[in-house]
Image 1: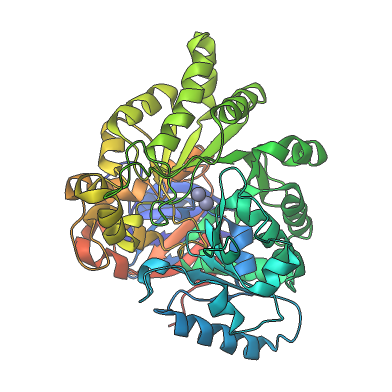
Image 2: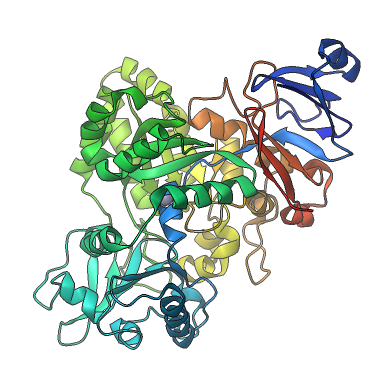
Length: 535
Ligand SMILES: [Zn+2]
Ligand SMILES: [Zn+2]
């Protein structure tokens, strides 16, 4: 099947002023990019002519970090994202219970954010107990780093006043030491989440289909599953074997259990099998700045000593880094606070300090620092030396910009997501939305990177703004680079996969403030249209 795209703006992403007239697609790949006349000479009688009618064609977008499994599971949960107080949380949960007719089983909801609730704090079990005293209920904070359980759930998991806080996590407590339902960070949340997720009724393949449709709607054809344990990979592999993936999915295995999965599924390591591949390993070094659990080198604004806290010891991080180099696996580390970034960098710097050939190995593996919210200039310098990739959650400037200015103070707060600095250090930065944390809306992210304005309309660190073309790189070719796929994806060039998106306007010619209003009209994976916006 051949298609010839013409009569529109074509952004190749090879260089800024590249404006070919036509793109010819054949057998899922780009066969030719250039003059319309020459393209037509290459057409056959069967070639379908696609008149773009002035619309814009460019490479489809690449999700540089997110969690497709979680996004899939969330399709079955209640969405609390629009709630503005405890009362609304309660009402939304009750409406969800009624809609899904939940009599027994469990209730899971996501997307609440205490920063945007009138009470300005996390709810406790008392709020959830009003919804149900018998059915276990868990509501997840939008950051994914904290949750609240009702009494039934705490009891089912055996969490009592005698349960100690685990290393790197904590249970909220009443004055008498009794747990109040609030649970912070993965080490403390694991038991509760395992209990809930294993009981949530699920048709995983159906949920995966819905999740893929979400990405397609935003023009994305390559996605990540950024924290996969062995049982989660088993489910992914089952979907892959059943032909359930229409997008490319790259899984990063939780480092502790990575070997187990690679040994069980060797065919997936660094190569696609049913559109699924294992890209490497993942570790999580701290929490989130909007939840005040990101690990900073200097105290939070207005605090004497509180800097957040690490999720792991230096020794653990060093071991994971050494292991990843030895196993030749790319390593991804969640680092929000600059102290977490330092811990990650120190582990790599130490690993390469003894042997120069090790530095080349590290550079070739392209380790990634995920989020980079408060990464410093000196750290970007070291990242450049190590060939480390900053994957930046730049939409933080809009979603939580006001919260960061408050929590971190005006100087550190305005330097959140320092994209321009990363660019100046020559780093191959890319962007993500960490779905399901927020919707994977790539053009909204581009808008954030070029405008840097908070939800309440405050400018935030405008000197960190970059150009539209530089921002588009962060969602196309730079994303491909992070997956070692820059030879197959990310630009429109002959020989690459025909992963394309059609937009209603050319972002390079659109007023910067209007970029988030640009519509994705069509998403194409290897020549096949998988999404078309309804008229
Ligand atoms: Zn993360
Ligand atoms: Zn994540």
